[in-house]
Image (tube, rainbow, N blue to C red; front, side, top):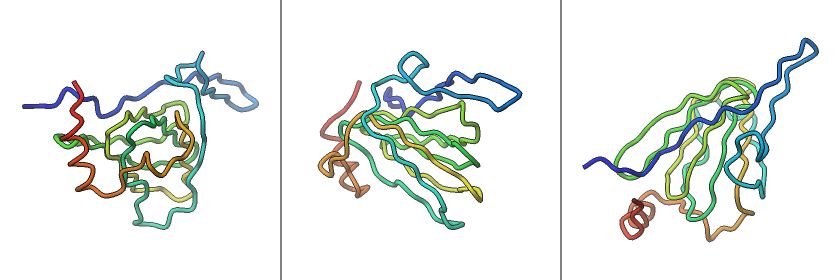
Amino acid sequence: MPSERPLGRIIALPKYDDPRGNLTVADLQGGMPFPIARAYWITDVPGGESRGAHAHRQCREVIISVSGSFCITLDNGQQRETFHLKRPWEALLVETGVWRTLEDFSSGAVCLVLASHDFSEDDYIREYDEFREYIARNPKK
């Protein structure tokens, strides 16, 4: 039976075109689904490497390709979906209890992550087998 749990969804961020340079905004008025508690970015990923293989118990994230491109595979234990981020005005919302892996980084890619919670190691699920056990114990409808 297919899961009803969403894997993720693309959010269109407001983009203001200007001949002097475009502006994109990530705030609550511009479509962010939660107040931002933390921001971090990933750069200089060597070719062939992947990052971010984990899930969160409480933290929700919006992931943006500020420069370059990369792929994000989301997995809810029953299905997988891969998103290709390559435009800074398109962001991917990742809900709690979804395993995510970032890969296929282009040269010069910059991955910006906006998080709903401050860092807490207790919030992370870093082993895939532990993730499968977690979602079995905590089914979402």
